Length: 594
Image 1 (tube, rainbow, N blue to C red):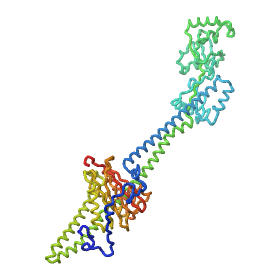
Image 2 (cartoon, rainbow, N blue to C red):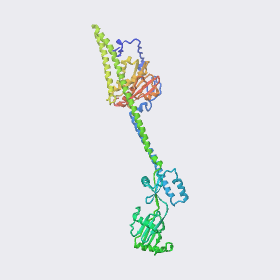
Image 3 (cartoon, one colour):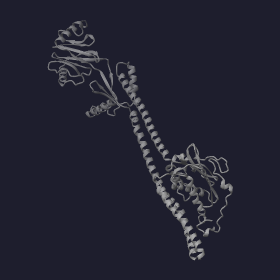
Image 4 (spheres, rainbow, N blue to C red):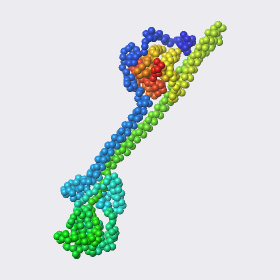
């Protein structure tokens, strides 16, 4: 027995008392090939319990899937917001259309276009209906507020501050909704005041719309207020007891006033008959047979002085705002966005706490994993040092004939210690490469497997009595980092040995080449206690462990090394309680070197 196969904790390789003798492998066990995927060592098919299907159980933890999941979440949130915005816009348009319809119905109800019973019905169902919260302000053609409803201000309040608030509210209404024009009557009643030198025509609200005579200014543009001088003259005429003459004209139709002295005549465009007249030289206003004479007199007056054009306007403008429902709907996007932001903030805080907890666990786990990795060669070195002390004593006390043999024994122990020192350097190199991009070189992964298996065989008593059965078929070179890939196999072998506690286990390792996918496949199978089905999807998660002293970083490192550093894939195609577990590693191959 060579020193490499000796137990370093016993003298001269002799087994310790009470230690079980290693069972000799039979030829069948030596030559048995590794079980195929989905089969047990005896060839019977087994079911795949998690991770061996089209989507492996660990795929959900890959960085690519995380990115896709994050992008999918963004798309889902954006789709929800856009759809919500679409619904809100549709409901808002319908609600605004309904408000416009109410405003038009209001204008129709107060006009003379409908019979009184229909106007009363509309007024009862819409105008005074408390369930319809449509705010509106009604103004005449001059912009004077004559009615308001649903504005939240005291009705009938003539205080200037209230008027100012109503005007500001009306401007805001007009900014979002075009006012509805309503003609309350189709016929407008006008009045003419004349005192011999002045003629003033007023509309149905007694507002001057046309005037002529001495000392009166020219007519103003439509919509501008009447000059104060005209208003004062009208007030003086009314106080003096001047009796007005009433007439009726088509609303908003152009009329003409011709005047000279105490004579005046008003005609309407499109109407051959004069509307009203007065003067000592003209027929009586009640003489309807004198229309032709009055018309001729109008032409004479118009030739003498240009007639004054005016209109009797009765239209009103209904300014309406948005209903309370529309205002609540308008806040929906803000509320939705606020809720999403709140959930996002909660998720972010929770994610940060989880990340911090995971990082703390990883740091502690890294310390434990480092101690675990260093413990194996340090324990071996301790045994070799103890053995070395005995060998050195033998060398010192040996006779001249035995000194050469004792020196060779010391050299062998020194060689083993050098291997363990190299092992320590290798462990330090491995940890230094975690988090950085390792250098990959084309190599035969079987060499890494053989080196790792040789290391475990050389320290069999330390790891237990287990057998390795290799079926390493010819495969192409693989771009890999030998140190990190050796770490992968060490972790998988140690997990297999831990699963075969208190039994003499067998670890089968096989390699093959998948020409269709151009990948090298590595199967590592043990006959240990297996993995529970509910844990299969979690075995590669950092921090997950079923061991009392484990920190769950070994398989997390394995997956990261295989998938992130080597562009491969690792999963568990088979695991059954009491029947063992199979790990499968697929690595991209350099097919041109087959």
